[in-house]
Picture (cartoon, rainbow, N blue to C red):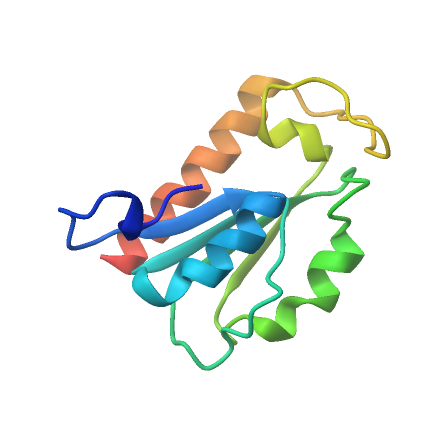
Length: 128
């Protein structure tokens, strides 16, 4: 998870994180120019923030399931971009191996990485 607070000399930055790191990033989003969630969702209401938000989930995520992400989407701005990557599991967003309760990824790591990089780059361009 990173945020502008992590780099006090920076005047611009994004907040983002994976899983519980994403939940924490939502709490820091007031100081950010954009928010990126990887297999995560907000517990903080950012609906009126106007913040550019990208939420990337996986169809095979057994922890931050597509249903959980969708049910928390009302906490995000109306123009938030929600993406579900076909074949991605919770651990597809990291390099830590299998996790109890997670689904089985069917997407190859290079394809997953490319999809995430392309989506984050598009948000960065949108956020300025």
